[in-house]
Length: 257
Ligand SMILES: Nc1nc2c(ncn2[C@@H]2O[C@H](COP(=O)(O)OP(=O)(O)O)[C@@H](O)[C@H]2O)c(=O)[nH]1
Ligand SMILES: [Mg+2]
Image 1 (cartoon, rainbow, N blue to C red):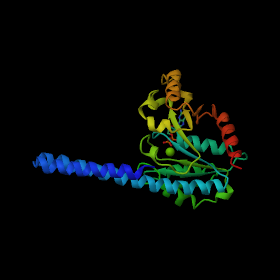
Image 2 (cartoon, rainbow, N blue to C red):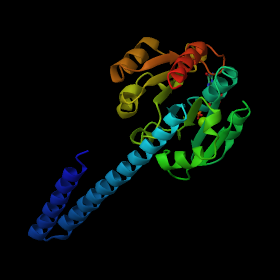
Image 3 (cartoon, protein in one colour):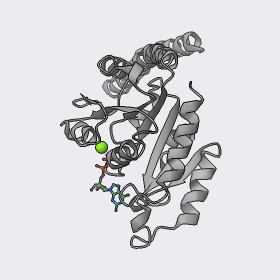
Image 4 (cartoon, rainbow, N blue to C red):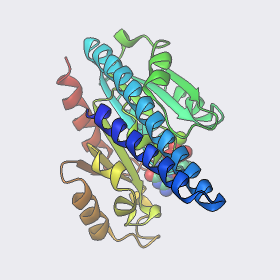
C-alpha cells in the first residue's frame, strides 16, 4: 500500500542528507548525516519485513478459515494473566468447543506446560530476544497441530504492549488484556495496541477494590481508544465474568462453521 512512493520519498531524503553532508563538510554534520542515513535504511528494512509478514499472515488466515477455525491473538503486558485466562477458558469450555494453543515467550516453555494441564494441545514458541510473534512463527507452530480437530485456536503473544501491535498473525480477533493492577491509563499510553483491539479483557477484577482500581475511568479510556471493541470484565482466578466470554466465543466460533 503506497510502499513504492514511501520508499522513493525516503530515498530522496537520503540523497538530500548526503548533499547536506557534502555542503557542510565537517565531522559533526557527517555523524548526524550518517545517523539519519542509518535510520532511513532501518525504515526501509522494517517496511520490507512488515510486508513479508502481512503476506504470510494472509496465508495463515486463508488456512485457518478453510479449517473453520476461530483464531485469537491475545496480547498484554507481562503478568496481566494471559496464561491463567487461557488455562481457565480451555478447562471450562471443554465439551463446548475444542481449543488448541500456540504460546510465545522470550524464554522457557512454562506457559505451554501450564496450558497443557487443561488437556488442550499447546505448542511453545521461544522467541529468544524477539519481542513479538510473527506470522511465520505461527505458521511453523500450527503445522504441529491437528487443525481439523479444533474449533478455536488461541495464540498467546509475547508479553508487551508495543512490538506485537504491528504484526498481523492471521487471527480473526485481536484480544487485548489489561489487569486492574496496571493502572487505568494504559489504553492512552499504548494507543496502537488498543486501537487495533477487537476485544478487551479487563482481568483480575477479584482484586480491583484492594488496588483502588477506578473502573469508570478505565472503561472510558478503553472506549475512547477502541469504541468498536467488546469488553469483558473477568477474573481468571475466580471465574467471575467468564461465562459471558465463553458465550461470545461460542457465537463467534459458530460463525466460522
Ligand atoms: N488475583 C488474580 N491473579 C491473577 C488473575 N489472573 C492471573 N493472575 C496471577 O497473575 C500472575 C501472572 O499470570 P500469568 O497468567 O502468568 O500472566 P501472563 O504473563 O500474562 O501470561 C500469576 O501469579 C497469576 O496467578 C486473576 O484474575 N486474579
Ligand atoms: Mg503467559
